Image (cartoon, rainbow, N blue to C red; front, side, top):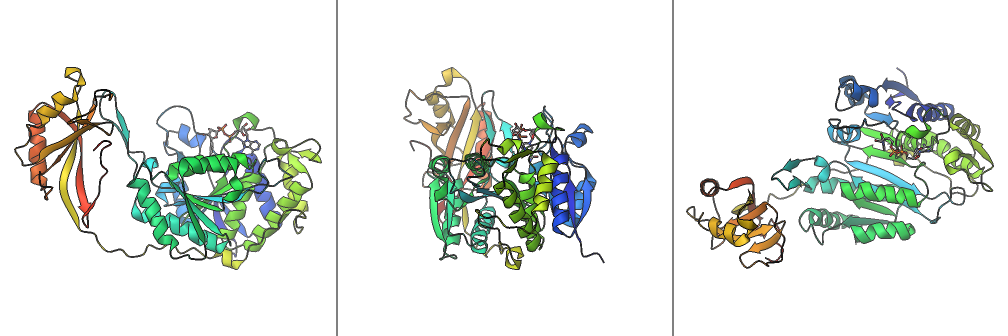
Length: 484
Ligand code: NAD
């Protein structure tokens, strides 16, 4: 049996084939024990009418090898195409997106030479579930889903990552001052898991000031863990400020399968010119080598790559007059790295990986007691565009829907209370929420809610959605309206 590790490889689109060839040449010369199952993904597959951009045999390959080294792809313009990255992440449970952002100053120009941070982004949840509906003429809805197990897995991953790589601090970023339930759950889970890692410092930043700090003082961060959308945005901010947008690699890690890539796209503007920088994909491949248990090869490649940068051998995107010694193309850069295999960088801290780094991280969920869930009301969303959208008109009408015992508590428009006693200045759309509960806040049944909806329909209203109001162990499981 071959001692080589089989991996799935996709050459992708645009500069993808050029940077993949350069990367594989370096891995081969460094002695990586790899065998490739090459699959086709991206533009050509999309254009065959396969909306995921991946053929069924590509999924089979990944199921078998469990490791994917992927070049960037071009997503065709126009609707109907699903993001290949999102499909791969969610189909194979790649819950953690890991993006190291490091400055290589003075060899790569940056205003923040001390930056060395890692962003660990939740990869499967949040608004990326893509559950969207147009509910009225004027209003569309996109649902943000945050789960306790999803939050726990990614937070554990961040702490385990910090432990494994000797990092000192994990910062959580959320917007839980506004999204008290969704982002609040993530933050609360972070605080709980943090207690199991007393040696690691912790910190929480609201995402807006957190992003500003990454742009202004990135060196204060070490490991950052955050939700999917915020992570997507801050990853690019961090990569940009470290001056390494063309250099960054990224890993998408799940319990079984993992995908490694560059953070940049397919660069159609320089395709076929032989000038693309292969470093982003190479850095993804270095993470892959650690993941598959070949840390000594990862170390060798990483050190040769840093030495190449130090020697001023630079592709056009990072070339600087006076600092660089030679402007090279993709293959020539790869050759320069190959020539330096076995050498260490002189000014930068050499990479060091060992067998410990290749051990899988423990992100298993800890058991939790089942909460007591009680139904105490319902929010009924209504499409209504009559009578000058006067909240008092719709409010008084809906008050009549009380035969089930449920009574109208309040109405909101875009989250703001408008009835009873709303403010006349509040702008109202055609999308209304009516909150119903028993006068004494007692438990209600499904039958009462169905009865209520029947009455609301008979009053002539189009109810477009309902959301039940629950308590869990007596704690309110829904937000209050603004002004409630
Ligand atoms: P891009 O990252 O491809 O290019 C942005 C700029 O950076 C361009 O000027 C490009 O020439 C330069 N650049 C990127 N990588 C480089 C490299 N390795 N060496 C030298 N210069 C490099 O972003 P874009 O132009 O917004 O997107 C192009 C295509 O890539 C789009 O179809 C997009 O959907 C796709 N994309 C794919 C991925 C992926 O597959 N993971 C990620 C991002 C974008």
